[in-house]
Image (cartoon, rainbow, N blue to C red):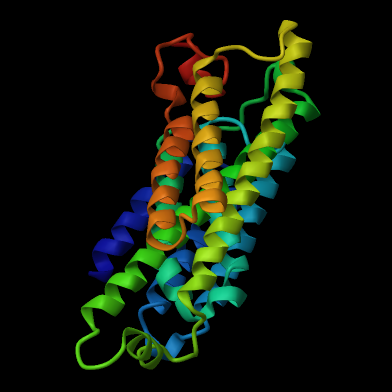
Length: 307
């Protein structure tokens, strides 16, 4: 009901305020979250067809403004710590979702039904951690760290978008098969959408493009991190748990690219592989805080470092 939704929103507001997020930052983020929800609901309603991308774009602008306020107040890009990581990861995922609109506008609503819930879940997960503005340590105050983190979240956004597109691809196939009695699946898909949609080949191609983009930015992230590691520790590579899991993710997506180019793993097999590879990325990006204390230097949350 609306009253229950309103009370949940109030509870979220108290949660943010109690963790010392600035009032302007909080207001921008909460309105941005609301616009994401409006975009999700608009995707279900035929009369708002084509408007959902406008609500989504508005939410992205407000979330970026919230991050900019935080950036100005703390003096570094908000890409460190679990909350700031959630802020960056969810924003890049929805940014790539918006970029996909012109290519797959016929299937855009199917994409929204996967990306918006995941982005909101990531944000709510991050809000369970401290949102207070905490300055970085001396070793963390470097442009190498900032760009390393930036390319890290560029890669995550690409991988997440590819996984969501793969989920949309599988949903479309399932919908076509379930309604294929009496006429061709392609005819049903065309008649059930208000605008002409591209073939599934375009969805499949976009999945591969995002995997490629993620793989490239992931490689750049490795290069930047390795160089800064050589400055701090005198070695280009350490078998830190985060390095190891990130390498597994890089190899998983390298395998996805290899299987498509040389063995023709497209369509359903390619979509399934994109989702499986994203599971490794989820562990790599969000599992580091669950490693044994002191096992990795990649934890930026102050309260976790103190333990």
